Structures are given as C-alpha cells and as structure tokens.
Amino acid sequence: MPHATLLTGIGELVTFDPSHEGPLGVVRDAALLEVDGRVEWTGPAAAAPRSDADAVLDAGGAAVIPGFVDSHTHLVFGGDRAAEFEARMAGRPYSAGGIRSTVAATREASDEVLRARLARFVIELRAQGTTTFEIKSGYGLTVPDEERILRLAGEVTPETTFLGAHVVPAEYADDPEAYVELVTGAMLDACAPHARWIDVFCETGAFTVEQSRRILTAGAERGLGVRVHASQLGPGDGVALAVELDAASVDHGTYLTDADVALLAGSDTVATLLPGVEFSTRHPYPDARGLIDAGVRVALASDCNPGSSFTSSMPFCIAVAVRDMDMTVPEAVRAATLGGAEALRRDDVGHLRPGARADYVVLDAPTYVHLAYRPGVPLVASTHVA
Ligand code: NIG
Ligand code: FE
Image (cartoon, rainbow, N blue to C red; front, side, top):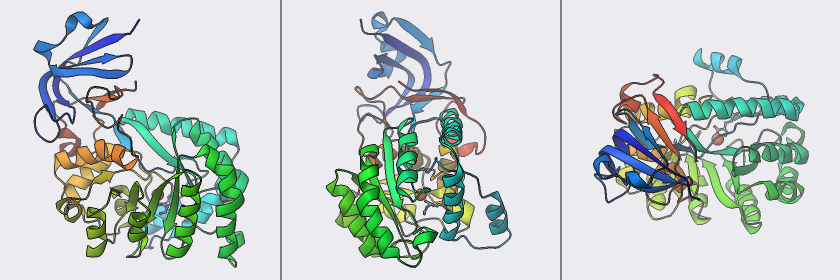
C-alpha cells in the first residue's frame, strides 16, 4: 500500500515548477502531497487532494523550500587547521600547501574516528537544511587511504568523488610524474568502484593542465563523471579543460577570464561558486553576476574542508552570495538547490516538481528571503529527507 502524507499550511512553497509563479515556482498558502517519498502534487492548500492522504501535517504558515544540494565538500579528514586560519586572519596568505598537514592527520586517524566525525558532519548538514551532498577524497593520497576515505564517504552519500589528485604528497615531491602514474593506475583501480566522480585540483602548485587531462580522462574511461577545481588561486586553463571534457561542474572560479565565461556559456558545465572559500581566505569573490548574465548555470556549495572553508552552512553561503557577490535572493536560493543538482547531473533533487524526491526544508521564517535577510540565524525548523 502506498503511503501518502499531505503537508499543508505552507505560507510560501518554493517548487521550481514552471506551472507555478516566477522563476522559483512559488505557491502561497500551499500544500504538498508526498507519496512513498516522492512529490505527487503541489498547489494551493484549498485545492489539495486531502482524501488521498493517510496523514496530514501543518507547516503553520512557514516557508518550505527544496533541501539544499551541497555539490562540493571534503568531509573525511583528521585534525583541523584552526591555527592556520588564525594566522591567515592575522595577515598570512592562504597556501594549498596546508593540505599536506591534513593529509598527515588523516592518515593517522582510524576508520572509527573518521566515521564518527563524518556522522557529526551529517547531523550538522541536516540541521542546516542540506539533504543531498557530495564528498571528495583527497586527504589520503595513498592507495589504501584514498580507498578507505571513499568507502567511508559512500556510507553516507552516493555522491562520492575520487580526488587523489588534490596535491602531490610530500613523498612524491621530487617526482610528481610518478604520483600521476599512481593516481591513474593502482589508485584509480582501487578507488573507481567506490566513486561516482573524478576531480582534480588544476592549479599552480597542484596539477598542471596536462596532468589534469590525463587523470580526468583515465577516470572518465572508467565510467566516472568529471569535475574540476580550477582558477581558485589565480587564472589558468582549468576551466577550458573542464569544458573540453564536458565536466559536470568546474568549481571555485575565483579568477575567471572573459574567455572562461564565454566557454562556460556555450557548455553544459555548471560553474560552482564557493563563497566560504573567499570569506575564509580573503580572496576576492568570484564574478557571479558576470556568469549569470552570460547565461552560465551557477551552483553554490560549501566546499566544507578544514583549510579553505570550514563551514557546512548553505544558508551562510546564500547570505554571502547575496551580500557580496551581487546575486539576487532568488538566484542564490536557486544556485543552492537546483544549481547544486545540475552540478551533480541529478534531476530528482533540488526542486519539488511532481516525481522529485520529497526532500524539503521547513524554515522558521515566512519567506525564503529570510535566508539572506537574517544571516547567521538558525532558520531551519526541520529537514525532511525522503
Ligand atoms: O577546495 N582547492 C583545493 N582543495 C580545497 C582546499 C583544501 C585545503 O586547504 O585543505 C578547496 O578549497
Ligand atoms: Fe574543494
């Protein structure tokens, strides 16, 4: 027997259904019918198919939005880098070299420690309205460590990404090519069965565009989808490579050129912006306005990691994107939900159209606008994961 729940009394429902109002597909005084974990119907509460429901819940006039889709995190790691952050806020620049200290702490941590930490992060994500999240490896950088990070990540999400090419580990500092051989050989063999995606940090100080192409192509040949970290610390050719390889997403984009924006506009690659990184490294914010005006699809994600952005809060990312990246509130809410789903090439999450997973957030607010209007305030009343 199917199970149907009617959530009614919704003051403002964001669906992204084009048959409802505006770009967010808003319904006021709304209801949502969920059948067996999927959205069956949304519309005005007065027109709700009440007799179909086994249970009726009342949202009490609150706003309801799709669960956030955080398409970029690095949640499996040991230690933290509070001292590095403190020094940065006192004037030291951010350096990708800090990644190696987390690699050392992660290698030392037991599975039990990493798993317990991850469980706490999942609680933290849910409490802030995130219902779908991606997790990258990249703090192991040996075959067994990368493999176990992906195995642990796979216990909490299907969106797992092999990032063996995060940086060249210290033991390969004199022979980075040998490390690229390892990543495209034995490490990929061990990790591909546990990953849906492959990613590379294509940046000066990490991997060159040629190395990145080899690594991403090897992953794609094993059936992994492609994602790229690019143009975080300076301009480079990573965006062009992402477009060349039809990456689902190119992430960071802090230092995009006009040519990058034009390439993205003519592609299916989403630009995933990570405002927590600029906030926490004092780099300039990416040009969200230029991307959106050029027709590029934009996602917002937390990039939660111990070095460049230790926030797991999508409401925080929305507030910063609106305040400091010239995004409108609807654009930021879209980027944090539907945009994240596009960056993961998922059509079942990030919206509440009929057929979607019934993953939604009840806000302690009358409208989604409060997500940017009330920064830092815990506005998630409850998170529903189908
Ligand atoms: O996405 N850019 C590379 N990797 C992470 C930073 C990791 C770290 O500093 O530990 C990022 O920002
Ligand atoms: Fe990252």
